[in-house]
Length: 315
Length: 248
Image (cartoon, rainbow over all chains, first blue to last red; front, top):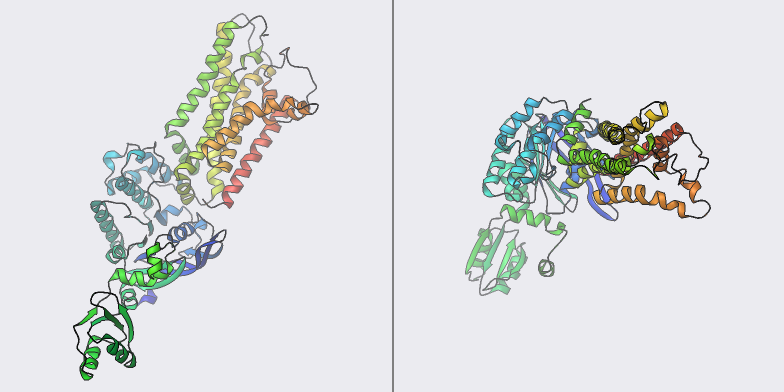
């Protein structure tokens, strides 16, 4: 079934170097038509750089990214094909919201009536004549979304759209993205929060340090990334650890009080039976279901660019 | 055409071009009034004398033109511009057209405004526009302002920072060109080939001012305009070329 879905965004071998720093490293992924794809990675993983390369703002050091089979620079009146919100603060503070949209519309031969339509759509009609510099982050974000929707594009790119928003704003953006997806648009949205993506996305592209870590559905990602472990506590820890290793499990010490073992590769039933057969007392036998955030941390843990010192030393 | 109207909306929807435009006209016209009121004695009155303060307006226009693009870099709207119009040369040329149009009108207002003000105060000084040379001096401000603005736009695109671009333009046009003459022997010869000196020679500001040493200039007034135009367009081209190469 996935094979019938058109590839709306297709990156191949995308690489961006700034001097000696590699921001995006041989990145290849596809974004399916009519789906919401989350673009996930820790801060500094290269998400924004990738988005700028998709939009032709930054020139890839090597590699290519195509939109519906074309380079962005070859799109005729690109706002009609791709709408994007990369940074809500990219507005002139002394220009009114309406004037901001008016020049964008004019550049792609869109009628002025469309400006009023999108202002209405995002609920900014009453402040349309106010200068964008006085807008709150939430309002700026709405203005950015209005700009993205101006050309009624089939593809939408959003870079960290909920960052810094209050709960009401977050809810509004989330609902809005669901709406866009229901209209059959292709949405590519970046975030460093997996929980946010689980709420909105069907597919995921996960990167860390500019490299692709995972591409596929959200469900597969969670299944793939969350290795189930079992927490065991026993007064005979050393003997138990030895048995489990022989039995084929992987054992790691758990530093809780009282100390325990974290076992992977065996489920709780196998561990319990093994302990009973060898007369070992168990105080706790607790399967740990991995959460989304854990899955994400597990996959990108090695790829986070800026560890705090505590993390680095305990790792 | 759609790109030109986009740039027109952009330029006129913020306050600074309006403020710069009005200042660029009011400043030289007001100073001309002072100058005319005190004229006589040392100052030989001719059409060139009516344009002595136009340089003030030209400096403000340099700021206006540089701001037209540096503010886009400052606030990130240049990215929205290039996103809407991936052909960066076309987008920047449209901006150049709009800026040149506006500053040309400002230049005409300054040229004729200063002349009219001088004539109003000194009605008997014989300041009618009789010859082609007189017309060139007054109406020529439109061309000089527009070309100066294109040069400033090019510098703005290259430098990208408002403070840097404005400082460079003002220090160069107001100080460096006149300080060059202090270089012994070659200073004056170098000055004869500097862009704003060339613009002034086209206008003919102070051409009969007795204080200036009469020297043979390498170019005719129209030759100087062409020379100034070539430099302005070369700087603009360099700016546009670098913008197409750089990351936005």
